[in-house]
Image (spheres, rainbow, N blue to C red):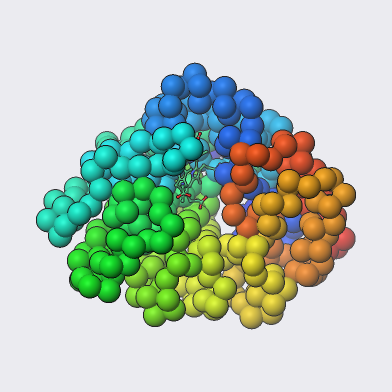
Length: 356
Ligand code: 1CP
């Protein structure tokens, strides 16, 4: 476990320290676009079993690293493990998405929710983290993650994915205190879970607030950002003598970047709608930035991919503080060759911006 980290690009960048080239990883880098992922999922039988089998979760975490010179591994798991451990019963239905057998319907349901013990109820995640660290052997850092309380609550109340977030928004406006009770419970559970991931070996933490962007500005502050801030305050920011950086990603956060940068996180994840150069001029002194190529660019061809990478690098400009990524997860239809073109382009084209 104490193996010395060989590739420190990601961690140095998250703290704004000089590097030789821009580090890169991809959200959802282990996933359905890789034939070897589909084969392992087949072997597991279904997605939930894959998440719950540490050997297989470790195997799929390593798959993209075997193909590409990525600067980080991300734990293979899902944000919905916490609600599943609270008894909601997660299933993933092909072409529908995640669904819960027992969604939350009332205040009584919320009051009855347990707080999962990370090493007991979610021990399979911690075992996966320990196995992956062993397997990585210090080659690149391991990113642990969780969903934001708001994003988890959308799935728990809607019962699965949603287009209009009708049920949770009704609760937000009609019974805000009920929703606050749930969000507070989730913030505590997420903090415990992430701290356990850190103790098990996660070296960087990312909080995914995939659905924060569907809220009005005051509702975002009250129902999403406040709880992420609570989590950031409750996280271990140092473990085994190493500082643990925290990345906060809200999709659709266009006008709230300064508020996100003020939460105490080390880096802000940007979706592709944002202008990374403009964002840097606002908050670049305070936090690192992660992103933000449109994942749809990967549907094109090597020349277009390299041009888009070059544009983003130029827009960010000279110096450290930029972790290259997609503006959201890579999609199942992407040709793995194109993902390789993307990663190599970031490394090759970014060297000129780091002359130290
Ligand atoms: O094999 C399959 O069909 C499952 C597809 C899949 C995968 C590969 C799901 C179901 N989850 C995952 C893995 C996953 N989920 C990772 C792995 C690590 C990585 O390589 O990046 C991570 C970080 C997540 C996180 C996650 N799950 C988020 C937040 C990130 C994001 O993309 O916005 C969300 C919203 C989920 C819920 C979820 N789980 C699975 C799907 C298809 C979804 C999204 C459904 C929806 O759009 O509402």
